[in-house]
Image (cartoon, rainbow, N blue to C red; front, side, top):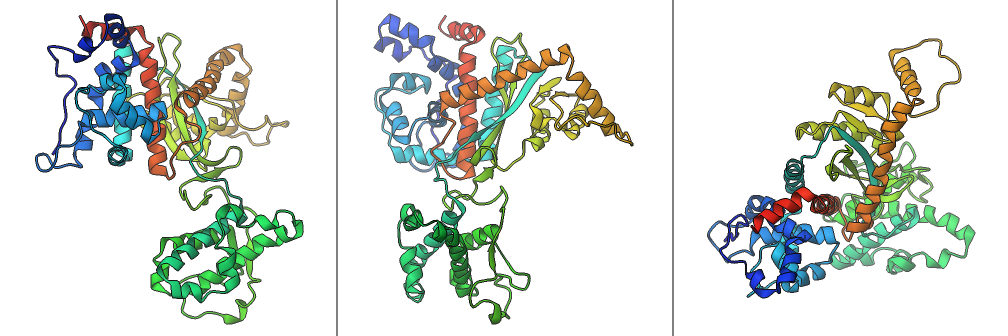
Length: 483
C-alpha cells in the first residue's frame, strides 16, 4: 500500500522547533536541509516510485517522498548504505530535510537497497534531474544563453585488468560455475587446466612475474585454453545458456582471432579437425579497440586511451556572468569509449527537448569539428571551440566550403574578442573538479551502467541543489516560509 506525506501540506506546528533551542532552530532554517525540504522534496519522483506498489493492498510502504529524497542525498553525500541508513535513523537534519516525524522511525539497509533498486531507471533519473533543474532555473532566473560543455572520467568499483588477466578471469569464472552446476563435465577437463584456474584471481599468474620469457608466452597459452574450452562445450545447450560461457565467448572474440577457415559458431555442424589440434590458429589481436569488456564483473565499462577503464559523463553548465550561481543543465552519462566529438549532437538534442538551447556553446578542441559547428548552427547555436588539427602549411589546390569555413574559424581564434569569449570555458575544468571532490564522483561504489548512470546524474543534481542553496534568492524564499 502506497504511503506518502505531501511536503506541500502546511502544518500548524513544526515539531522541530519545539525540540531545539531557538538559535539551533534558526540555523537549521537557513541550512541546505531547509532548501531540500521546502524546495526540492516536493519534486521527488513519487508517482514513478509508487508504481512499484499496490495503491491500497499490502503493508504500507515507507514514506515515498522521504525514500526518493534519501536516495538522492545518499549519492550527493557519497554515503555508503550503512551511513545513509544511520542518517535516516539518527540525524535530525535528515529528518528535517525529508519531512520525517522523529517519534518512531524503523529502517534498515535492506529497505534502502530495495527502494534504490526501484529508482534505478534511466527514465526516472532523467525526469528527476530535468524537473528539479528546470524548477531551479526558474526560481533563480538563470540565464541560459551562454553554456560550456566538457566531460569527465568516472571509475567504477572494479579491478584494473590487463588483457591476459582478463582472459584468465573469464576462464576462472566459467570453470567455477561449471564445477558448481555440472561437476561431471568439470572433472572431465584436463587436470592442469582445473588446477591453474582454481586459484584466486589476484594470484592467478603470480608465479610468472619474474620470468619475462614465460610471461611473453602466457597470453598465447591462455587464449588457446579459452578456445579449447569453447570447442569442448560448443553444441552443449545447457552450457551455452550459462552467462559465464557467453562471457567467455565474448571476451575471446574481442581479444583474439582465428585463421580464415576457422570459426567458433554453435550453428556449424561440420568442424575441420585438422586445424584444431595444437591451437596454432589462435592469435591475439594487436589492438582490441576501446569498446570491449574490461572486467567480467562490469561488462558495461569500456576503455579510453587517455583516461583508462570506466565511464564518463558529459556536463553542460550555464556560464552567463550575470547569473548569481551557475547550474548544470545537461548531464549525459556514457561509457568511456564514447567520443567527445559525437557528444555535441546528443547535448544539443537534449537541450532542444528541454527548451534550454543556448546562443553560445563553449567547448574544447575535441568538440570543435566542422560537422559539429555546422550542426549547432541549425539549432541557432554558435559553437565556440578551437579547430581540431593543424593549420595547413600550403593553400590547397581546391578550396571547398568546409576548407573555407575552417580557415575563417582559425582566423577568428587569433582575435582578442574570440579569446575573451573562450576563456570562460576554462572555468568548467575547475567546476568539474569541485563536483568530483564534493560528491565523490571519482570512483563510485557500483558496477554496471544502470547503477553507475543513476549515481552520476544524482550526484550532479545534488551539486545543482548545493549551488541553489548559495543563492540569495533561494534564501529569501526559504525565509518567507517561516513568516
